[in-house]
Length: 62
Image (cartoon, rainbow, N blue to C red; front, side, top):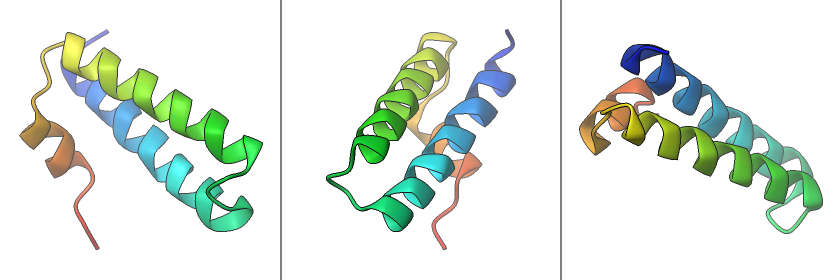
């Protein structure tokens, strides 16, 4: 998969994790699963060559 697609997947996973934490709380099982998925997606993006700046740019702070 292309680097850009991995970056987009990571940004989406982080957005989902943030939503899950807001809906269920930080200590919920749902949040734990969402955070694990986000970590996995970010790791995959970095393995594909994404930098921290690439990941930050894909999900700008509000």
